View 1 (cartoon, rainbow, N blue to C red):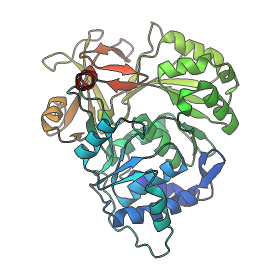
View 2: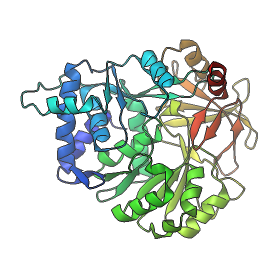
View 3: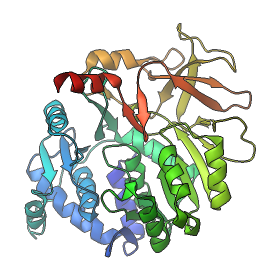
View 4: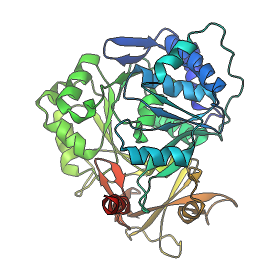
Length: 410
């Protein structure tokens, strides 16, 4: 794993392929050099306004070219970005901003002035660069206490994950990756940052385009998208869309966030000549933690979630933190390079979920997922169920405690 931040990996690629197309959004195109120049200018403005390593910048923009520029600019300023979906209820937004205390906030209303300032030729260069141990982003997920909780993800954790993705499922120049996931959900991170580490291109779906499988099929065909991701429930809608059979440019499709049924996986592979990869893992361990390619060797009702990513360890333990035998159900714990810092302003919950790793070096931690699973005889991990009342709807984590709190306050 390289000792580098996300912005350093992007800048290295800019030097290698400055004139390659980095981002496509509708009729707009940006090369690597153009994206770098825009993000560098905006980063200077953000740094002058207080963005710096260890600080957070809230970004509340819809999917667009400007969103990509803003996220890369935040990283160039040294800060971490906090995605705030413009469609979130006001109460949720107030909680997130009050909890994370961002140094500043980028919105559709404030961005034009920031970009105008960024065009100034006399902007000072950003002098404070982040370390690999600095936060890259803060993602808020549903909270069991009724309030969303922020998860702080460091550069080293996400870089480890993206480098593993590139090693295991390589992208290259000329390949195109679909960005259709809300930035409030962490799978968007690999859609937005993995391609530009390796000379590929991001194809940005229009706002709310992820809700329309016919639109997505048309975009994939029109822009020759080679890589995309879906949660199983939206993959089923995509497979059912009449236009999907024409998506012959797709080379690999990733699936995660929900149980992937073997029946759906077979339907997909009967329709398209593309690899289907099942992914598993919580936000607290830098997106996903395991993977399994689907093939004819998969038996059973659900596709197993596979084996750990590079520099991660997955344990299936009993209540006394002892490994359970193969085939026996236990709780899934994950240790290694992807384990995040913990929750914003929640030391007690962080201590409960991020616990000492009894199998690792002194001071190392593992994340208690709350998921039940078992090891299969073939070495694959199989997800079984949740321990608690958390559910997933289209891949989004929903704590029933948060729903109850909203209903009680209505």
